[in-house]
Image (cartoon, rainbow, N blue to C red; front, side, top):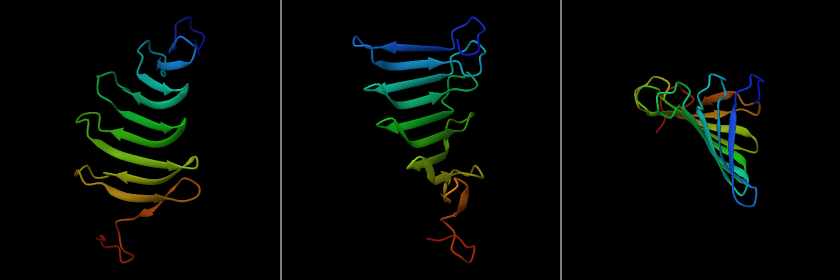
Length: 130
């Protein structure tokens, strides 16, 4: 009970040796468990969130040896992936984003501070590159 309201906010399932295998979480404390995580050898393997409770995935994070490697964001109406962020060394390094909803993803780089640095699909002239 993370917010001390008397209701469970996280439920974890453990194997016979006491190592966590999966968990469910109510991260907005509304009584609905919108988050699900899976663990491998006690370390995070994947995490999924259905923020609006409609049964469709809104967000997914993937981990290797417990370290975040990929985040995926989905359109709440269509379920289509609208953004994917690749992580390395604890920071975002590259994103594939469908900013205008046309189904085409543009590739962006992140700078050393985790801010979007530029569109990798554009030539220096500002025209789309091939």
